[in-house]
Length: 229
Ligand code: APR
Image 1 (cartoon, rainbow, N blue to C red):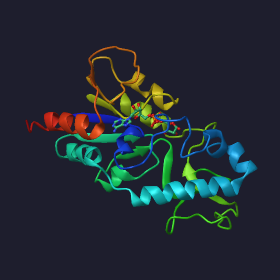
Image 2: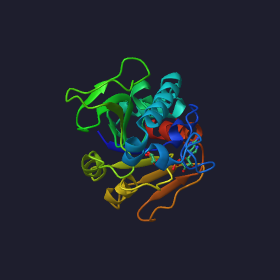
Image 3: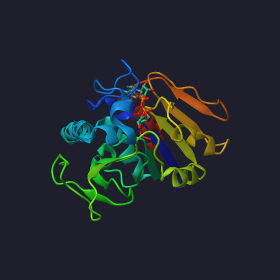
Image 4: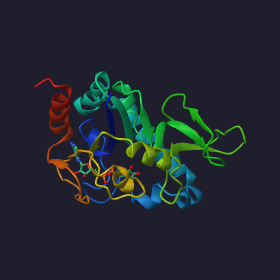
């Protein structure tokens, strides 16, 4: 079975109604990213940060996977598929993807504020300020903030090195270390990029740029890869 590695970003969930980070006004749902997505923000105003992520979680739970998420799950019928996602939503899994690596965590779980390895399922949509982990520290969203380690980056890099086909969807490649993953994909491996605004990549080997929204460009590509055409 050929191995397909896919790196996804916020753009794949845009058509599910979840906003991307860098498409509009530089704000994330009205906030400066440093006011909500950093350890300093949590230290300064934990209630604000908790509430911000509770609202994002509510949005994720209300959203539905779109045709692009389902198309990637369909690839599993013919290929050995791994999705590496920067997204904190769980729409890949809800579309049926079985092999998903979350580089930046997943908002549907909580995390100990003392030890990032301790994560838990959340009952409902909200983490309350008085909820604590087994060590007695407050629970926060299981997401990677700016300035924090990205523990899944090494396994993700190793996966990229094993790809037979590589697909990049809906990411501006503005945030490292995730943006560097494409450099681990061997030169001879075909690479497809689907984005209405193709990000800059070092143009080596066979790079196919599909300048379309995910529900159009990715769905077409999957049809081709499945041999449905
Ligand atoms: N289909 C495909 N791509 C789309 C669509 C769509 N319908 N709509 C927008 N895009 C593209 C944009 O053109 C852009 O290239 O999605 C990309 C979104 O880029 P960003 O907002 O920068 O999101 P992302 O690359 O996922 O951000 C990376 O930054 O803030 C952090 O941790 C956060 O994981 C996130 C990381």
